[in-house]
Length: 367
Image (cartoon, rainbow, N blue to C red; front, side):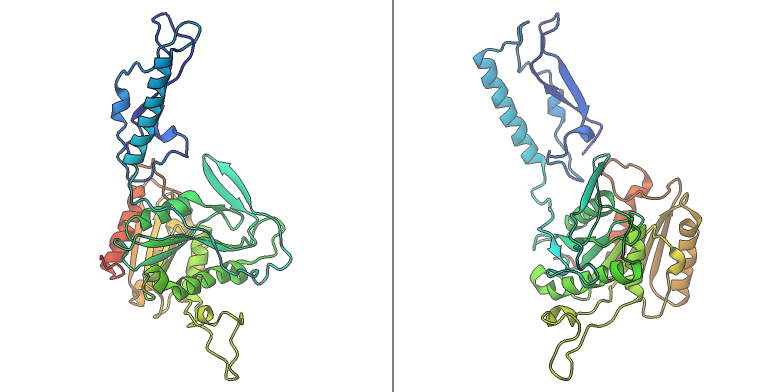
């Protein structure tokens, strides 16, 4: 959608000298968030540029009955147009899935509600004690069998859940790639008792097992499930790509491994099939091994040195071990670009490069 196109909103106020109602104009980007605009739409906003005189107001602001009918007809037409231009295939998140329905290990006794603050229209989440996944599943006729678990960033103090989470998941699912936004526990939040290596990592590992355990139900191939992380979420993603196991086998006595009562889930592998690290934090911790999942790396040239220079070293580590790797460093960009609908810079195309990389790597199989 052209977010610079102007949409004219007419409303009844005291008429001016020419007996015309005043009008307000906004860019499409400033429209209320409840309107069904999504990525990639080509909104038919040009029709609103016509000088329709739908409201006639006298100087007292009164309006005739016929004018009221016209207004109602206009509102109906406006809503109908929005419905028609909104893609029928747009995918919205399903109901959040708790990773541990009976409570996450290490979160016992923590009952506080999540906190959400709004920054420039974006949801920033903290105080997470019930880690979960928000699923974005593609329609069966578009599904490629590939899935990505997306971990937003926020310095392990909070999660910037839209431009590093839901925006990305929506874009992927609209192209046949199932996506799951991970809400993981925060290790550096004030008074937090969590750690990155014990709790945030456990949440990602649990998410991988959960998606694999329901892969058949969701039309996902169990060998095409990967992770993506932004900033602090990138650290969670690369740790999961370094510390994984093939699942908990049945004990000789017939009992289960950890988390008794969920054997099907716990026998699933926690190894990601690929990893996408988008300006990951603490890149010096990234380790490469011959069994490392293929890696897709993205950052901005102006990011801090441990990322903008560190990822170049990370790429070389993987290449030396012949682990498939691809690196993109975008000039003129820094940290935290994520995916935003109004970003027209070259860095906004990173997700298209990611989709191409998935296809070239054999992770996408179109229906």
